[in-house]
Image 1 (tube, rainbow, N blue to C red):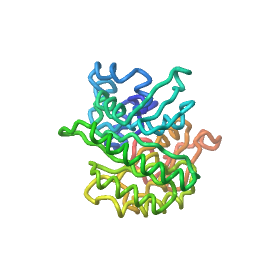
Image 2 (image 1 turned 135 degrees about the vertical axis):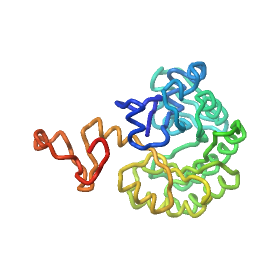
Image 3 (image 1 turned 90 degrees about the vertical axis):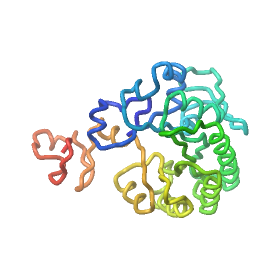
Image 4 (image 1 turned 60 degrees about the vertical axis):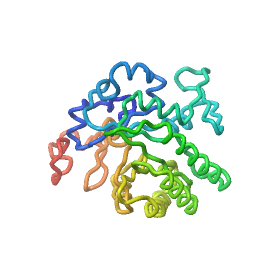
Length: 277
């Protein structure tokens, strides 16, 4: 469940537990901007700060830097950006900084800092991205403090180029991580392209380590990805759909704001036993 700023929107933690989710996600970019890693650490980390007793995974912040920030400048050492919160103030984030902040947040699953490309992109740009992602992944792992109950995941990139996906997966497995994420998908490509890239990537990832598809997604996306070897998912869609009165059922998607449902006392799905139904 996505709890960007250490809380899942519109839900108490007891409600989140009732959904069956085992992990919640916090976002390093948002938390480093506000309230800051130092304060969260002072407050006892995200578990105490947010009231969640289970595992917490934190995104490295790379995707948000690319999508939310202004004047982003990538270079080998790290990424320079201005925040969407404090306007013209410049920030600089290195792989080591991201890992340190995630340590302050007391995240059980740390994600390496990577660069997420928007599709479509040129092959030359994707090749450069894959090689830098591998170098940043190594630096992230070297900065990670290994301890019981905590781990760090690498992130496979490669846009929609099959050979680059394979190359990225092999580079990361050579470095060695506790789990492997598939990044850079669900960013504008077709569902079939996403499925194709997953199917190309998973055979090159260890079978005894979790495989995590980032930012996905709809029930059909999840089923298709599971079929292709994925174990873990995160997406804002479940809570966003709930807040906007959209229900996913075995009969399809239903907009509960439609007038016909105003006096309908039937369950959302008569074959489902979840609290909502």
